[in-house]
Structures are given as structure tokens and as C-alpha cells.
Length: 332
Image (cartoon, rainbow, N blue to C red; front, side, top):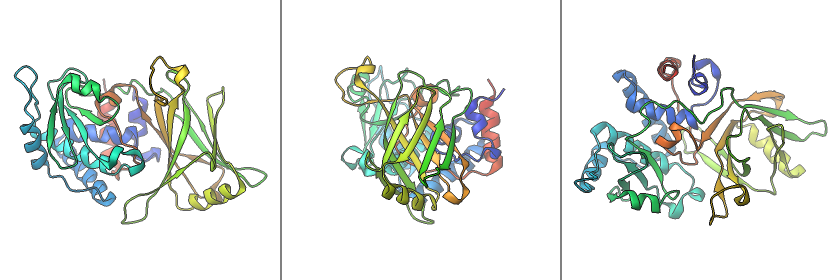
């Protein structure tokens, strides 16, 4: 039986290849057994990165940089040519993250060695395209500050952090003319999150994504006890702006956190929730209507393998490519 993640990848789903599905496509571009399919997915990823305006980073240069960060005899930095290609693409993906979510505007990423156990030693690919070796202790000291791809784990993720039944989004126009976005969450792993950051991403043809961050003055976000998430414009003006924005079919990213008192972690004012949520919006003249949605999980084997920048980019995959990925990851 297909897992929920692979079911979402099926061509009939209408769900954009973003969030966890984008990570799954990255994984397939490296580990799918069909070499031609791996290459075609990689080409689609390159086109997405080019369209987004990510700086070029040739795989050859990534391989040379990672080879120079050789590490120690007991904990060497091991990276095959295919791994270097994946790392270069992942570095470029971090380039698509809006500056408001990037420390110092830097797109540096951590690349775990292929022989590392869990989140162990590896190298940091920096803004200048050079790599610096990091031991396990170095990595633990900077945990949470860098995006990462751990080459040595989760060769075939089982999406253990995902619900068996998917989240369901809807767009509704209320009787008073207001707009409401709702999402029935299939599950809430861990502490109940607070979705306290909202990011709209517009996708003008042939140009990079245009981001707009929405604050508390724009949206009221509520999570009820029935696991139903509601997003309502906080004023008539905000409702008009949302209605206008929906006409361009943007994607919406809801970033979650957990209140510090609800977590065992200490010393941080904002602790990341177990998942973020991406909704594909639609014009109001189509309401009421379902809204395709996908998670950006922070738990589970796929999330342990690769983090995901706060980007609303989506991958353009042909139905045959989506079906082939789904079939592979549906098997155990």
C-alpha cells in the first residue's frame, strides 16, 4: 500500500511538488534505481533553480570544494560525484530562500559525510563556494543555524513523520464577504504548534518568486481543538488584499513554532514546530473550493535526511515522472 507521501506525488493529486514532495524529488534524483529517471528529475530541478534566479554552482566545483575539506583519518569527508551534484543543487535551493529567513543573507549548507552516522561530521559549503570541514562537535554547536543534507542516512525514507491521511485545505467566502482559509490537519505530532509566520509567494512567469510576509495585522491564525486551522484577514483592508492576491494563485507558507513552556527545550524564545504547511491558493470566484496542501515536516526520516529552506518553489514534473517516483517510494 502506498504511503501518504508517495500518494501525494501521484499525477492525479493536483498537489504541487513543493515541501516534502520537493525533498522526495531531490532524494529520487540521487537514489532512484532508474538512471534515466534520476537524470530527468535532476534536469527538472536545475530548470526550477535557474528560473528562481539561484546562482550557478557547477557540480565539479562542489566536488572539488568538498574533497578539499578532507577531515581526519577517523572521520573523513566522503562524497561521491553523485553526492556532490546533489549538494550543489541543494546549495542553490538555499539561494531561493527569502532573505528574511536567511541569517546574514548567506546560503551556506551543511553536507554530512556519506559515512557519517546520523547528523555527524561533514563540511559546510559557504557563500564563496568553498567548503570547511566540521566535526560532529562543530555540527552540534551549529545545529539549527544551517540547512543540511546528510548523505549517509535515510537512503529510502518511509515518511515516518507524516500522517496516514492527508491534510485538507479549503477556501471560503463568508456571508459578510470576508475570506477564510481553512485546513483540517490530519494529525499533530508532538506539542500543538502555533502557526505564527505567514509567507505568500507569487510566481510571475519567467521571473523569481516574489515574497510577501504577512503579520498579525494582516491575518488571524487560529488552531482549534478539533485540529482545524483557520486563517482570517484581520481587517476589511486585509481581506481585500488577500482577495486580490488570490487571483494570482500564490502559494502560502505557514511556519510553525511551539511555545517555550510547552517544550522540553530551554534557552530559545521560539522553538520550531513539528511541521510547516504550504497551501496552493485560488481566485475567490472559484470558492468554495479545495486547496491543495503539503507539509514541510521537521520530524521523520525524510526530514532527518534533508532540511528545507523556507522557499515556495515547486518542481514541474511530468505525470510519468511523478508516477515513477510514487511507485518506488510506495514499496517497502
